[in-house]
Length: 190
Image (tube, rainbow, N blue to C red; front, side, top):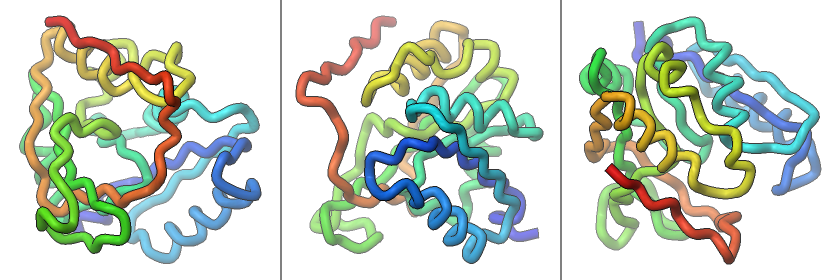
């Protein structure tokens, strides 16, 4: 079985679309159906988008114990399944570090194309049991940012060791951010 066939994509869409005409979800599903070899699950809800709520709903639908959550603006490496299996154990969770591409640059690791993003917000791998034990994504985060740091901190506080490693082939494509001008990251206290 191909590695991509072992993965199931769960998409949690919302009726509100800040980037277009409200039909973007339909276009995304069509593109995924054409390119994705594995199973695709798509659910749309008619309420304002929050990343925390969307990830929680998508993970709630997962039937497998091993989960990997990420945003849609990433290229995933061919060996992703092997890496998730290597880094997620009963005591560890994985927060892969991606290569952040500069505007207009191609997906290859070069300092002229981008840089490693050391904090690697936006994705993690764990077991569903671990994720549920820490209380999932905290849905008090309804604006841009903070939910990833909070999740990482709660994994740590519940006794799971978050592992961060560079993940070759994991590329984040440039796009303008929705980060509010007054955004301040939360401080992680150990």
